[in-house]
Length: 271
Image (cartoon, rainbow, N blue to C red):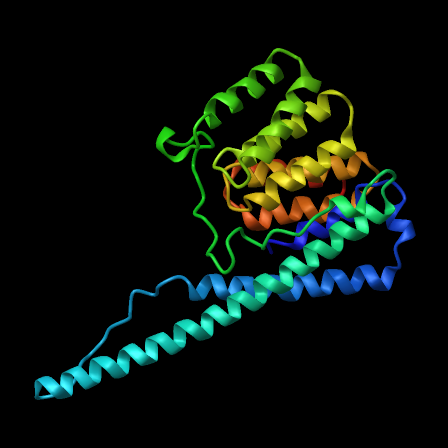
């Protein structure tokens, strides 16, 4: 389900939903749903069951060596098969994200298509498993790049002091400088908060989407989904808001974000 919320960005510009062909949007949603299932299957395959064991049969040293070589060839072939499957999913997902980005740029005023650039591979490094969830957005200093914590703190101070436009600029520079860093998801989330303070709901919604899609298992993922859902409702996209809030409940069932999403769905009279 990592990509499912990305399609909601098509609704962030007023009038987009009416401008897009219903069948085309339905096709995109269906394709992303299929891709989501593939990602879930791959994730299960990357988890151990605890029941794996290897028995090397043979009465002589040569027989045992032959058995080990055969097992090694089998495991190598299986690894290559999974690698190819993951690469296909990454390639397909990356292409879909790039297509959505291009379509958004086409309908946005002042967007330079030539400046979009190449879409980074889904999940960061190609075929790499998703990073584990971090319980705290502030990680150990040894894991941060030189100056990363200081730059983040500077942007956070601007936000706390009420200098929202300055905070937006500083957080934007931070996410460009430390792309994929341990504090990047938090930076996107706080940038969205600054946009909210300025009443720029559309920009806030995009930042919340970036916070979630960049770290879908991160500490701010649930909060970002809930905030995205509420922003979509403010933009007049209640149906998509209900879907997004429901996604927060499904992905993070025992979290505070799920409770907030449940309450929000009730207040919006979601089906």
